[in-house]
Each structure stands twice: as C-alpha cells, then as structure tokens.
Length: 165
Image 1 (cartoon, one colour):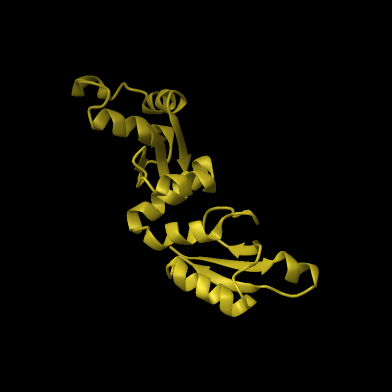
Image 2 (image 1 turned 30 degrees about the horizontal axis):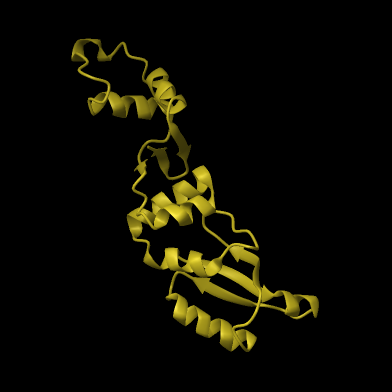
C-alpha cells in the first residue's frame, strides 16, 4: 500500500521554504531516511506532514511517518483491507499499533455491508445455532444483524464489516 505525503521541517516552514513529497510504503525506513537527508541536508530535523494523498484514512501533521512507512511497507493485500477498515473504525493510530500483531484481534467480513447481510451470514454459517430450514424464511435477518452489531465492538466500513474481539 502506498501513501504520498508532503513533508517539511519547522525551520524551513518558518523561513517560508517549501517541503518535499515522499511516497511511503515502497521502501524501508533506511532508504526513506536517506531520501530525507538528501532533500533536507541532514537528519537532525523536526519533520511534520503538511499534506497527503491518501486512500481511506486521515493523516495528522504529527503522525510518525517513519512508523507509518514501516507498516505500509509490510502489508499484504488482505491486511491492506483490514488496515483500512481499522483506520475507519478506530483511527490511524490504532491501525498502526495493531499492524504489529497482524490484526489478531480483528476479523473482517469483506462481503458484508449491512445488517441484513450480517444476519444472513450468521444464520447461514450456523453461528446462531441450528435453525430448521422450514422456518428460515420467517427470520428477520436485518434484526439479527442489528442485534449482533449493537452488542459487539464492530462497525460497517467501506471495506466490509469489521469486528474487534
């Protein structure tokens, strides 16, 4: 996953000088540090993020972009979606923190986008117990999904239904 950020130092900013764009998630931190030194002259700076181009989460100017780069660099395709869903659900800082554990305390149901789909999934997978086929047509899947979503640490996100357990 990649993220483009516009970085400056407080000294340069106060002198009216422009910063530089950097792409995160395409190289490790050693390479990024080299590019920062090349751009700003040395590594003894107070960096901050002035702007960013993101795909699904907000970045604050004080975000530790070296830590964020490290996380983005190692995410695989599945964890990209989980990462973005956690960003939407609990914020960027939580997603960065959870990335270290591989999102072990989250489950993403990527194809579930509303309470009815959640209820249907839970019944179909047998997670609501054994329900005879003869009465399934009378079930209110939306109410089942609503009850589940209200009683768990979860949220419907752009990437599906995410649950923290």
